Length: 334
Image 1: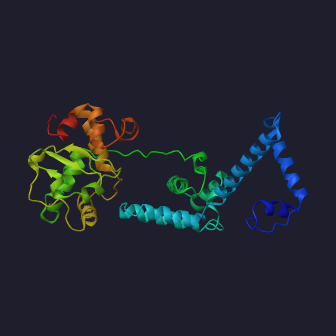
Image 2: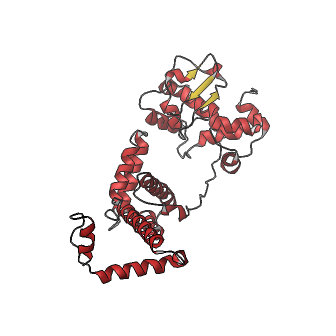
Image 3: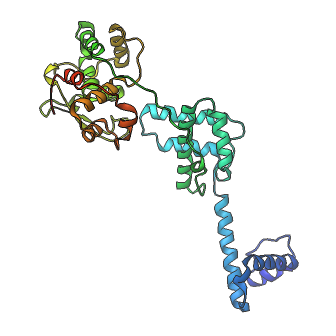
């Protein structure tokens, strides 16, 4: 009967449905009950218009809810969308996604159907043994859902409600003057001489090892006495210009980046007798001696490439005497 009613209006437009008129009446009653006070006092025409609008909105909602992809497809397309990132970044993305996909049943899950609880269990199963991995895995999972939102594969980002583990900062002691001088003395030896400029850029400009390794010869502006750290070189993606201090000690003919830079940097540390090396030791050394000598956190913040001074206060700065700092900088002032 229901099909006969609709086919009389638009013959051939509606497929045969396993419904009867009573089903339609029941659905109309359920809809009006759900609308509640909204239908009170409406005439027949107004009520039909409201029901028709409700039906259309419901159809769109159902279609939107079904517009999604599997978690695996979303993750892989998210990685592909960032293929222009640095090779190390792309490698990390692939590695962390592989670990997530090893969790049973995750790959085939519709992205839109995944909630906060499921995402929390996923992170715990994939990265629960390491707070560092959990924190990074959470960031990558968040980025996958953010990409899914852009593609309209999901409505919200369930990872927003998952707290990241607190960061427990390690205390990194700056090198003392004896260690600094030992490194410089070793770098002056013929077998390590091509690392002198790299050592200087880390010690007196605060550059990270990977930033030094990526520098191009034109980034060293000898005439302006400064180093340009381009956004493609910087770890954080933001460019900065750092003064090239004590530049008179440098030999401009040295290559900026010798071949096998990482291996040569490790060899220099070993030759200097510094076998137990903390990551970012030279960057912490630069920050501590800079703060003690120049006493200008705003300038130090800019040279380090930080958004604010909070990280300097909580992690990088270790008290150093002004006398020792003056010795480090050669009693030089900005």
